[in-house]
Amino acid sequence: MAYEVPPPKYVRLAQTIQARIEDGTYPPGERVPSENQLAQTFGMSRPTVVRALELLKRDGWLESRQGYGTIVRGRLEVVEEKDRRGRAALEREESGTPGRLVSVGEAVAPARVASVLGLPKRTKALVRRFLVEEDGEPVELVSSYFPAGLAEGTELADSKPLGESTRAHLETRKKVRFDHATERVSARLPAVDEAELLGLPDGVPVLSVLVVACDASGQALQVSDVLLPADRQELEDAYRLT
Image 1 (cartoon, rainbow, N blue to C red):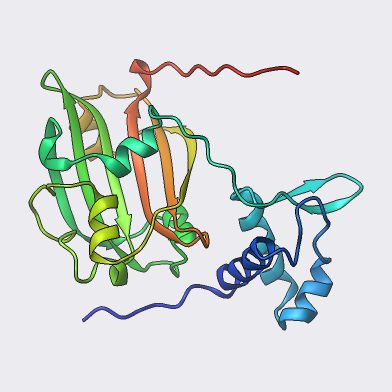
Image 2 (cartoon, one colour):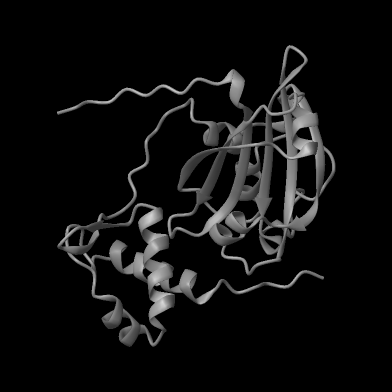
């Protein structure tokens, strides 16, 4: 039997502050109340307030300006680009994608995944791991994490490839709506099993694209860790300087 685990206090506080940003209580461009004021308003400790504000800054709702304080940025603006790794991970149909479903099951969520899902440390989440191939060669390893409660009543725990994307499946089965996603890119050495699946020799790092998909309230519905062999990647961006 799966039990619903309430999110930590700082996550609930962040959601409350975000709701106030969305309804105009804290308008864009204005300073949010001080940490002490927020602690008094919501009856929470200052460390809890600090963690909530850091979460909102990380997700783009707030920003710090030197000498002025913490400013409301407003609703997260989403860049619509079809070549985003996160979009592919969320909208890929497993049964129609070259590759294979490596494993499905419950596992303890890594610390950074548990944090964005609002799960306590050492809490298990449902994990689907899919290896994407091109011309028979492994090119991408995607580990997607779902809160156990959200996965109930779906086929996400089945050990066969889905005939639709995880996004479409959740939106249909659970009546949720994916609203926006954030991507964070970092580099690291792969674990032994990751290196074997991707066919990497010793010492070759991977790029990890952590994709956090949320509903309109900012609640994370799915977190996907997309691993790419670093020696086969090239990152390029273009932007205006005006």
